[in-house]
Image 1 (cartoon, rainbow, N blue to C red):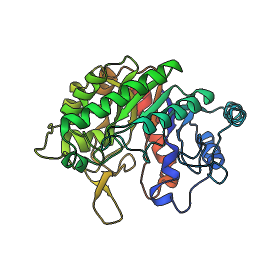
Image 2: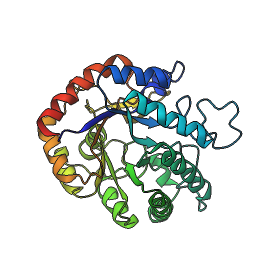
Image 3: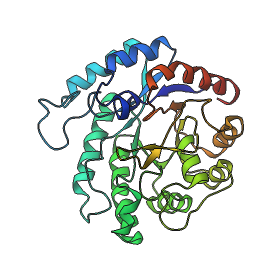
Length: 315
């Protein structure tokens, strides 16, 4: 059986699109026309979201604090013939590593978990929120304990809603070495917790080793990283890599560049079969991720065709 295909809606709202985002209805209309099965929801303005993390929702674009609003959105998605493959929760305004009190982070996760449940979404994405350099301020063991403790609680919250939690590791956040991925996954030790494997991040974390603090930890190829993560992967993002990072406003490396299929160096005919063997997916989705790509809207159709070819071979 082939995989269902979605794309992350954040590609059209942040980075190059932050000043001129594409509204959610237009995104859905285009995805349906291109033959997508669904969308992965970036749950932050202006796309549908559970509301303002730090204040009233009155002027918060896309806020849906009421269950009736969420029920209506779920019905509209069904009418369009589209589903949600997952949700990227808006947790970046919270502190995770540089505080001993993760209660605000956990409260915001709880709000997003309820929002996802109301929309029928099964998977919630998390990350380490803060950059790799935070480990210069907080010692490694303390930082890890804080992340693990918070995510254990988040997993319990998600489990109450029948959801899984997926950690998207990437060069722009702390704990971006291969050994970190295994260590934290095993420390959380919850059946509904796993790693989100993005093929672009896999290249930048596992092969290039960009933004790693201290001694770099890399492999000759992504295949080695995937094998190290065998049985720990519960969500998949696919996109190419050109071994570079997206740059921040000051021109510094931020996170993986996410070039469209064919504009990078990845050998998907080698990567995808290994990924399928290593992953333990509680669903049938593959998600395209064009995060920060400057012309994501125009590249969407070409990426859909490329992933369809992979789906025919390996889905």
